[in-house]
Image (cartoon, rainbow, N blue to C red; front, side, top):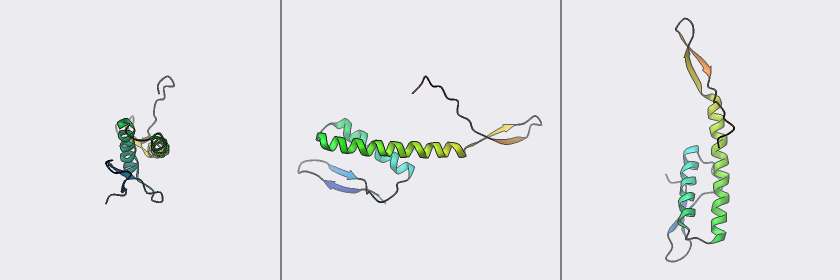
Amino acid sequence: MDSFRHVLKEPGRKWRRIMPRKKRLTFEESLERLEELVDILENGDISLEESLNYYKEGIELASLCSKELEEAEKQVMMLQKNAEGKFIEKPYQIEENNNEF
């Protein structure tokens, strides 16, 4: 089921999908909504006020997605072979390079 409601802001304009405020979105729903916001903002046929509102919503969603990814990374385990050739679980560590963004 679609978790967004559709509204038509002005005659002749496209339908806009508005995120409900109270429902906590899954990571996938947040990412999908973030992609929609990028499309809307890149299209450029909305007012400055609408653009700012969509931008703020996008920043909030990006922050939520980032936090969820960080939590998921903490849970990821990597299988490695030990000296006897048996697989063991070790925490997955991401190599950080401070020169890249």
